[in-house]
Length: 637
Image (cartoon, rainbow, N blue to C red):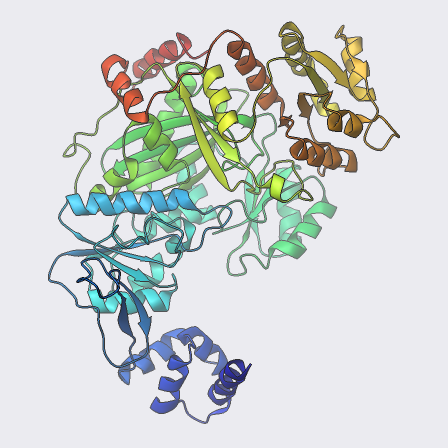
């Protein structure tokens, strides 16, 4: 309590002092006040406080965390800043590059970006650079004492990063491996004289600024969903009326789909704007036409400014509207023709070169009724980078680091990789068992906290492996419970349920779904809803009479019944599928599980098999895409 009272006393001194003399400024820094806090208290700005502090030679020093406990000389120490006298961080004469990490793990930004940072360090080391990491997360590999040449365990704020840059004098800073957090610092670092390596701040802003990006798409004649931007409720309503409901709304410059929603009416949009303007107050709200019944694709690519390498094209199993971080991704794509694949490849090349990208680029697409639309371009590593790298054996982040220091794709011999007879599937892991009261249905806002990969020579086996790794063991027999919303009462649902009947499953369904199935000749038994008395679906699940659940949510929000079913399913470990795409994939997987045993190979063995028996090595022309699509058809399905 005394310490807090003392800090509050210093805060009052800063706010009320006639002038901020050297003694008070030194005292405030020793008590942990940032330049930005001081500027707020003095009704000044951070830039002026920083300039005054440097002019008075009030600078932090860096103290060593001795990784050997003083028993031996520490060859790989790391450092933290403090306002004392003696500096223990000694600058070397080697060429240096600073990599900014991702900061604290949170939904939307986690260990995937740390993977990219570590591989970036490896790439820089191979090119002869001293790699310096700035990160503040003890749960990462990038903050292991022996990963980098030098580690600064500091927050990813402009003040802290500039303090280290001023000491180390790097030839450049890499901001594209740590997700959105370091990307936001790019312009300010450049304004302070530190070059951004790889894609320029101009290219980053071009991808992030909706109006400028829209102009680039118009110039390249690339389709995108109708869009608008808004800073007020009236602006948002006007944009939504022009675009037409439903609309996908989200703040700009955020990660993980934070505060992203689908709005179906003026009322829903007004409510959203009341909450979302606080998420990214200095940037407008983005409003896009929501493409219903569309497939989504992720493409990871490398660009050296002149040439583009397609690292991987992933197709989402879930339809558009589920955040890409929560979707199940399949590599190579499983339902695309040669012309559509060639469009994805062509658009990726045009966009990467149009942004003058150097390093790694992630582009998200949607395909509706055969038309490919660009959703967004991320001029940085993405959460799919580790998955694609492991599936293909091409270390994308390591190569990207080398491109950022001047190497080219041709220099590095990167021109393609073997398309092996294997399917890799990324499945998301959710925290719902630990949070039983949470809503279990997926949407535009990311909710997963991890991911796993299944790999084999067939779609069904890979899906089964990924599901098992994510904690869902698909049953090969038993009873299937089906409850779908009115929009899903269509022939696709009939075909899926028939597939489960052929596999030997019994089917039960809630009243409306049961009537729909019966009308279409599907034998089933009705069961009461969760709110309809005893021996309802909740009781049936608890008694172990259901082995698999298909339950698609109703409308904009999950009703009480759906929430109760989802909570009970997770509690009793019953596989719970909330999209028709996932249900169709599960049926295909169970069909193969009935006739095949799961086998295991190391990732290195899969890569070796790819090198021995791969097909087309490069994706560029329509002929390349045609060969790949035919090759995929020969084994994937």
